[in-house]
Image (cartoon, rainbow, N blue to C red; front, side, top):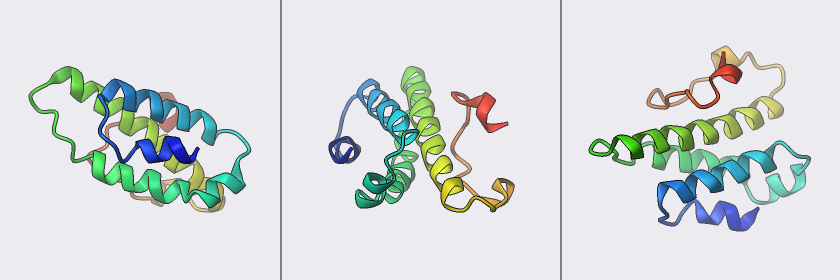
Length: 110
């Protein structure tokens, strides 16, 4: 998991980042709480969300779609762990960056 998280700080094509975030999403659904805590998983996903949301794709519609998928995947990872850490918090009161568009996991968000 440490290596996958480290990849988030490097420059890769969007398709590769999409695969990395998909792998992290799948891992995050498992029972890896000790590793998640040890690697500061939530902090690193949050930092990636903030940085990557600024990635400019205005001249490339395909890149914009990849960006949305990557951000959606990371949002789902982050949201899942935040709710797990605070199970009694009303998820409607949690604020997330407004620039994230939730299309990829639309069924889970609503």
